[in-house]
Amino acid sequence: MRSLYFRKWTDGPASKDALNGAHGFDVDGVLGQYVVLEETAVVPAPKSLSYEEAATLPTAGLTAYMATVGQNDVRDKYVLVQGTGGVSIFALQFAAAAKGRVLVTSSSDEKLALVRKMGAIDGINYKTYPQWSEQVLALTKGHGADLVVDVGGRDTLDQSVKSLSYGGMLSIVGGLSGYDGSLSAVGLLNKTANARGIFVGSRADYLRMSRFIVEHRLRPVIDRVFPLEQYEAALEHLRTGNPVGRVVLKL
Image (cartoon, rainbow, N blue to C red):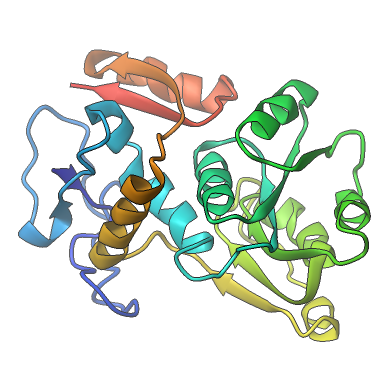
């Protein structure tokens, strides 16, 4: 069994009540040998995964699933993913498994070479190309990205909108650079595009994700595993180690 991020969001659209009580946000998280959880806050883990692999799913995995294949048909569509962190790597895996054509941005050519091996059709170094939306358009022959998974927030939203295709979808996931950035309404309007906020997902969404993982034989990418007593070192590695994929604590 795995714990979920939200205690009471079992299915259907989000609501104030369903989003009340997120583990590690407005109620205690699960950093402990023993924790008490509501029945609706636990879910079976995919049997094909190890303990460590399944531990990556409730937040990063489910967020990426809902930002990509959980709400979008990406087959033969261009999908732009930002970076190589936990959510981004999952987004790459999900979209590639669904036959999407995935582009990835990173500041590291070494990491871009790595994501190509994971299924990305190409990568863009945003240090080399600060206006990386121009490279997205070039690589898609002017079409743009049908789906953009934005994890950067304030510093990336403008380029994300410029990267979109006509009728495209912007999945707003995170705010690595802050959540107070401006979103170009005219940019969306001129491309008849849409923007949607992604806040993890429900218990039913998790079960659908689990079936997708088993069907496509996906394995989460784990950067490093720490024992529980080294959780402070794990947090520091997460903050400064620039990991590819997830960092896991093992009981």
